[in-house]
Length: 142
Image 1: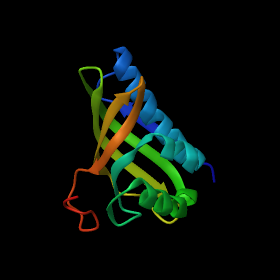
Image 2: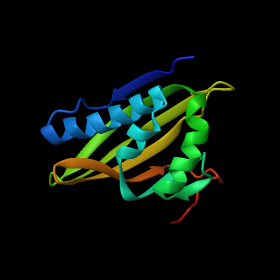
Image 3: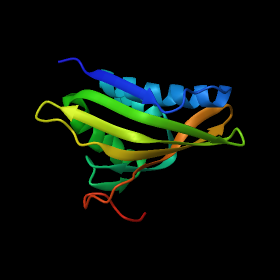
Image 4: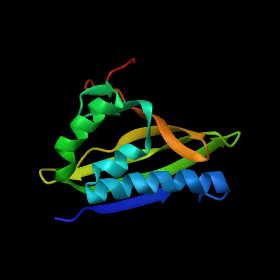
């Protein structure tokens, strides 16, 4: 069953940096939709820390890659809602919003999500991806 993607922004990205950051988030969603682990992982800095329910906590890129490769084929719908992009000094950005990933067995739960990004050599990368709730499967510290 093909995946669906829904993305909405609280404020329409306007500046060059906001548009570039928004494209990273859209690419993230499309990679989930296409079940494309290679594209998804390319969006992250090599030293990223990622909150992942699939991995059971806050993990490295390698640990996330292993966990996401197991669950990605089952994702049927991706929703990123009420995204808000804040760019600082043209080299750091934070995206706030809520996300939901459905899979074949049930609808996923809505979760607050924050992505922190940095721009190196004119390319944005995600350096931290964090859930904003306190479900017990997420590590409370890194």
